[in-house]
Image (cartoon, rainbow, N blue to C red; front, side, top):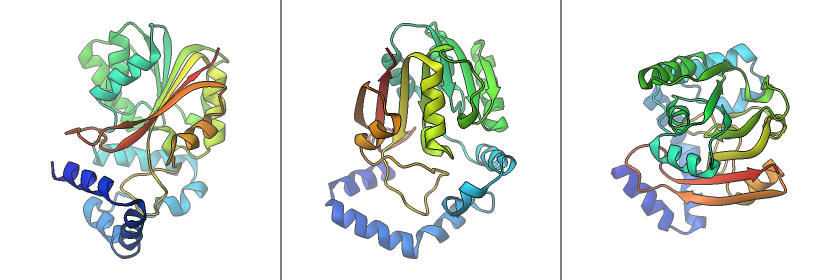
Length: 246
């Protein structure tokens, strides 16, 4: 509730004032506050050196993140929005598996689900979620930039709260468009770059145009979704992109 009120208050401030307050926070408080909040496992300087990390270092960082921190970005509300965007059931590849809730929702709705994530820890959580729901899902451990699937091998691809985490945006988008037959659904937070944030984001989309340029598809729908009033899950503005392959 307090966080919701804070977000709503910020949204009412003029953009110039919000930017000024953010700059002050970044310069004076953000880094120390993150260290105090998360402790030694959290890489507070992630955005300074992520581009030079090895694959093993990257995987280890995300395994620790899933081990020490519950990620509730994608939950039931997002799952419903994703299902609406997909339309009729078919085969779907979920890139950036997370805890597994949307995969279960899609499978229960009749989709044939394959899920991929870079974190072993996240995949174990997702497997447990699927098993508890009695759902069969094909899980793969892989980087989004290296998806090991044939061209047009899935009707749909979902990439929700994931594209903002990838090392190579262009390579990831190329794979998404290569693999999808019908539609690509992308959901990301609407954010401007900040050096010190409570996440491992590497790509930032502050407007729908940023997402439209990144995806570079001829036929699409793209809009801002406001979720400040949520009690859980991601709280703030998101960008929903639905790309049509045909």
